[in-house]
Length: 258
Image (cartoon, rainbow, N blue to C red; front, side, top):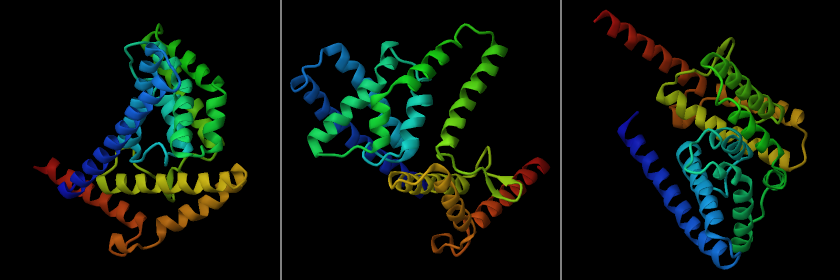
C-alpha cells in the first residue's frame, strides 16, 4: 500500500480511537455516579465497550454513532465471542453493556438509537445461543471443531443474508471478490461494503422489506461496479480490480522466473 495512504488511514483510525476512549471515560464516570454501578460490573462494561471502539475504528473506520447494523451484528455475534477475555463473565455482559452505553448516549446527547439496536438490546436470545454454541466447541477434537466452527459461521452468514446485510460475492460473470485482495481491491471492497450498509439501513429504517431492499441494492451495486469514477482516473471499480489482478499475476510470474 502507498505510504501516504497508509499514513492517512493510521491517522484517521487514531482519531476514532481517541474520540472513542474520551467518550468511554465520560461514560464510566456516569455509570459510577449516576447509575451507581458496582465496580466489577463497570469493569466488565468498560472492557466490552473498549473492544467495540477498537473494532469499529480498526476494522470499520467508524464510531458508535455511525455504525451500521452489520457492524454491531458482526461484532456481537462473531468477533467479540471469539475474543479472549480475562473474565469469562465479560462475554455475558455484552448486551447489558451495549444497552447501558446506548442509554448514556441518549442522556448525554439526546441520541436516538436505531430500531435494530434497541431490538438487539432488548433480546439477548440469539447472542446467548451463539455464545453457548461457541463455548461447546472447546472440548471437541480438531476435526470435529473445524466442522462445527464452519457450521457456526455459516449460521451467521445465513442470518446476515436473510436481512440483506451481505455484499454480493460476484463482481463479474463467474468472478468474485478475491479471498486475498490487493490493496486497491481491498479499499474498493471496504468502500462498497460501507456504501451497501448505509443504503441498506436507510431503506430498512424507511420501512422497506428485506427482499425489496435487496433488489434495489443489487441494481445500485451493479451500476457502481461498472461506472467510471473521476477518483479512479475515469476507470470503473471493476476495471481497477481486474487490472490490479493482472499486474499482481505478472509480478508473481516474474518472481517465479527469477
